[in-house]
Image 1 (tube, rainbow, N blue to C red):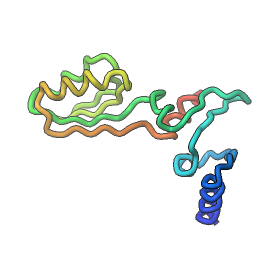
Image 2: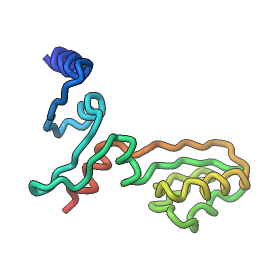
Image 3: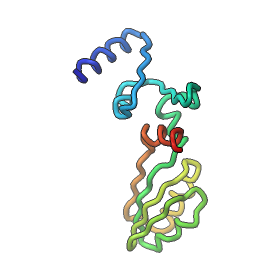
Image 4: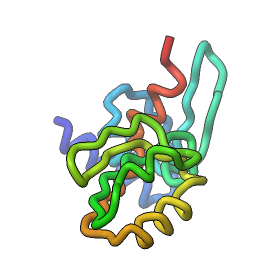
Length: 129
């Protein structure tokens, strides 16, 4: 039934019609929605495309460098820093990415992974107690 539902939604979208989908199945929303509205206590608190809303949360960065990876710990916009040997994982504000990349280049990048925030991250930002 899920596959049939998704196919039908896609047909309606292709016909240029709008659909209002209320769902807590975040992977479904990511797959089906062109625009997202986050509603809290009956009021729209954020709206936009998934790309437009990604700025609201932090990306997860994993980096390994030739020189001391601990340098990232003190950069503005770096949070939840965890280091294991010559590799670090942390969350980063989107505004800090240029400085993080520049620092990585100076330290000699061996590995760099950036995972953007998910719709679940966006949702949790507005529904945390």
